[in-house]
Image (tube, rainbow, N blue to C red; front, side):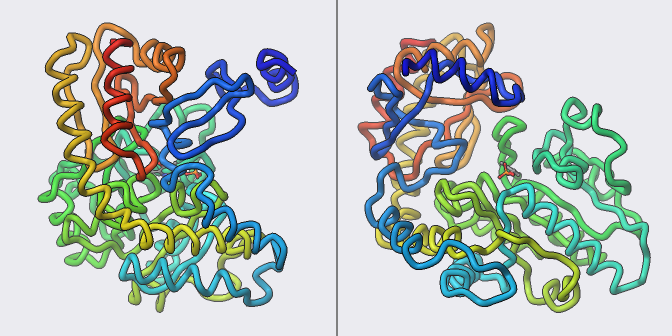
Length: 395
Ligand SMILES: *Cc1c(COP(=O)(O)O)cnc(C)c1O
């Protein structure tokens, strides 16, 4: 079938909830993806900050194939080997204590919200606890995760959402402080806001949040779904701030394409929140997903990926800064590590993304005017140069 025929078929049978770019991607190798007609694309989107290892990583693929031949699913009624291994590695990387595996980032956020409410309920028996979330944030599309997503456009048609959510301004400690009440049980934020337009937290803001939460026994939930798993050169972005959350959510690169997420609790929260009967999932922590997580951690270590990100990120920033200086269409660069955004003016971001696609480069947008670059973590300086060359032409 031709690419157009696949697209027509998809449009005929798949619910139209995305305006997809006109390309059918079929296979990948390293940092390149290929469409069904054999055209090659340099991938600076990585499936939305997912495929950190690059495509067709043989060790990773072999680990998955081996697990498929053993067992794919057994349920949470029994123990399985990959779950134990993966949980140990995630706990070690985060320096936190207990892991609950989910099937997506959204579900990790749901679990984090439930854990926070349960923690507060165990403290005072109240059923009217509040959560402070950030304007311009993104935490997912289910009703709980949507309720803490600070985007009225996403929320409005689906109201009523869960109650007790107050929105504060990101990077404004006073704004958060003024929304704290005796009922506040948690504050949730992305360490680096992703969908909202690539805004890293200010160190003083995050440190202030930690102090505020400690003062009032409020749980600090950091959503690391996009900015975690090495993207900023640390396992998790908060490790670069010297601030530790009580609950962390992760997903996206955690399974490098296999659908898996997790929320991770510190000891204090783990010991006084969810117990058997409170929360569950059929698939979460399944052997195939956890074999992926385990192999991802092994490959990061083997390839020294955190160090690689720390080395390559300054080069990416330098080239993007040059581009910003030389292009009338780019007004600013923001970001951390391999999570970068270019603020576009005059042209629409959609236009630039489309032109880049035609020129063989995959990039995505964030917010209304930001071009987002979240490449596989294995990119080289040559890949950066190639990206810049294509982007320069498009701009
Ligand atoms: C992508 C994302 C989510 C949602 O994750 P899904 O796997 O799409 O459910 C939540 N929070 C942040 C910060 C994200 O980037």
